[in-house]
Image (tube, rainbow, N blue to C red):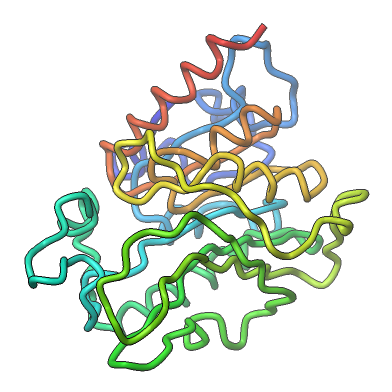
Length: 279
């Protein structure tokens, strides 16, 4: 189920959707053909997300649900520290992610994320959408709202994810209790039937029972996926596989990508457990 983009380069170049018989090792996972109840609906790729997305056919993915690393460790604030200047013991992100330190120079981070969004837009169908979850923060005493990342991309709406509050060690601003989801769309995108009745503020608790340092809840991914008509689901920053789990539960075809083999294995194990519980 997990394929290393480097080790299997000859087998999966190019990735085609729907997949051809020459790529039998993944055709049963994300082709348009129905799968049995004991098989996964998806495929996991271990490697660089831009490199892999650039091998996927253009305009072949219906919806992208993703939450990239926030680059939080380059913060000028003390969000990962307690009031005495020491590290907050429960902040797993103080060590970054597996294979990613999360401490890029801001300009490099912005360029990287814009390149990622460009690759996402290329694979997105003319009626497709990207749910791009990110976090606003105070940097250098001023609001950093990620406009420098999403500017020039077709943002149609900002969804507020109201999560549980945490601990705020900075006396300069109120406790942050929400993150944002940029709804970035192609021109022909429309919500699934009745989804337009859902408000743009989603009150969903954070995920807590997950060993990944920054997971988002399955309910959040499910709401994004269920709001869009049928088609392939992609998460280029798969992490622990929350989007994959939500897509599997919804019986949707999906693709997950992550640079970390550890997180790829984590996702595979979660999907196996989901399938085992299916009737």
